[in-house]
Length: 242
Image (tube, rainbow, N blue to C red):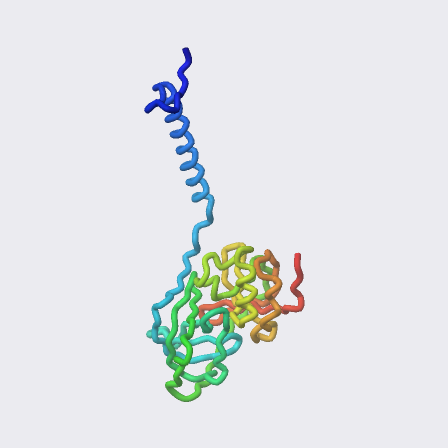
């Protein structure tokens, strides 16, 4: 006679118990395997950092063209300076026009990724340490290039958001660019981080690029080297959806 389970008994027959244990064990193994496959299929987080809550002191010379930047002298580097892009808290660029060319002291939080560094300037902490200085920003023309990649907002991409790119980040990036965050172009081949500027070397108008973020796009422009940063001069009027 076949075994069958009677509800009012304390235990099911041994054959039924053995069968149920096998089924439950098999389903548990399948669930664990499926979960591990999902984890392995996820893209790893980028090696980017936002030192949230760690407020540091910085001293250097402010230049505002094309985007607000702090030039910090490197000890023993023959006059070379590190370039720190400057932004305000939230989705906003920072207005430091009154400090252009002046040596200042400020407080802020570091944001960095793959050699590019940014400082989120704490409100009301910029103090002039000396008079105005004549700053000569040397640009080395690396030639005209055609590159494919993605336009991102520099603040999120460098570390405030992770991932700070792709379709999931489209709306945030559009708002950041509209708020004055400097735009970056990240190449598909090698992940170069290029600061986007207008063809005359000035900042690109805030609303110009927001409709092109999170898209695979090809840009033609002049590649420039300024210190340890690379810039791509483009004509925003030539952009189009592929």
